[in-house]
Length: 512
Image (cartoon, rainbow, N blue to C red; front, side, top):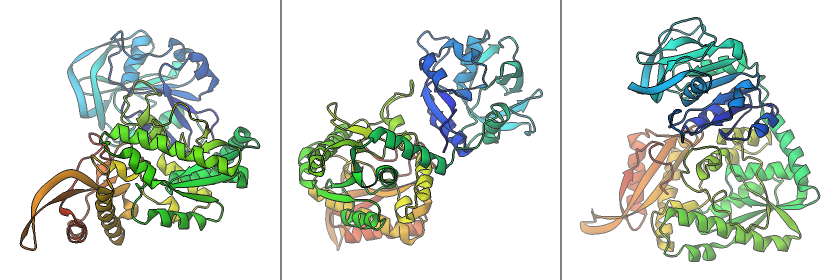
């Protein structure tokens, strides 16, 4: 994966911004997201091959709307505007944007009305996905309309200025031939080369880590998941035995996970793993805490304290490795632009301000599928690389409400049933995640001819490409029946099982 001359996405706050970067990376071209208000000198320093202006919820004529430096249109490089990006381009270059009488949300029919660089060879009409309440009513000088919907100018182009824009969202799967439209821009207009591949990413990361660490020593916060395992392996390749992995039992792991993860990682043969049982202190800190954000921040802070206590036992340790991914950063802090913070991740939003380590986060700009490819390039086993994501705060965010040893026992046993049955049915690798959630709800039931009043378990199973959006998985009814029957029969304290059929958005994958 080659990091020179990216295609830069300027983020104006769209919920789909990360998908633009993903689609381009799927073409093996490096793309990064930056805030729309990035200082012009910093943008120039990145030496982008091309710019993409994302969508966003605002109106360009609103004085408080997000904006970018006007000089971006004078960089003599290709620019593609998407949704708000089209309106911003038109507004800044001399056109006019107004509130639409007929807004367009959801599917629309796009007619190709003139020869087009972006749409050449595509069938007309095309079904596209819209999300806008404003329209371009007057074009900037030099632009022509090449596509329209029933209510709006939908595609505008000015090849002499290398400026192109679409009112719809080609990055979402709902848009027919959306990938082809993006490919026209990436390869046909920008002329990018497909050199974003795992091997070059590994080589560059190893070199960068060596430069950052020098002769120093490093600890890695190991969770047993694919992210921290790949991060640790990258750092191990760079500095060898100056890396020690610390695997903390925070009392919030799944059934038998503390032992199983140690075994799996030691079988890799290249990681030095130090296991620390800190379950009592984590559960003590969480006693009586029910707010999800507070849980995450407590767990994140306590992890760091454990590492700070363990590090001196290993010598002079200056650096801490974390398996932070791009979606963690996007969802935790609005550093990219005007997008809203969804929730804090323990290894992003939960870090204490007095952190004594310097952070190494080699996967910070990667999506999960890219991390898996890098893991395979590094020779990690499928058992490690193929694991479903598990949240850093562990079962604390799947025990809704108070976290107690008894509630954790109930959830562990129920979750073990879900994992066993999903694997047995051949669904594990088809799903992004599958797990149990313990609800703070008791209900009446009948077991053995007697009345019961016991807990409720929700089963959550989703399909996703990157965790940023997800659809609930249509598991076979026979599989769901086996899961529900076993949980009620085998897990003491549960008499009801429900299925979560919410997609993301509007729900998140985890309940907290």
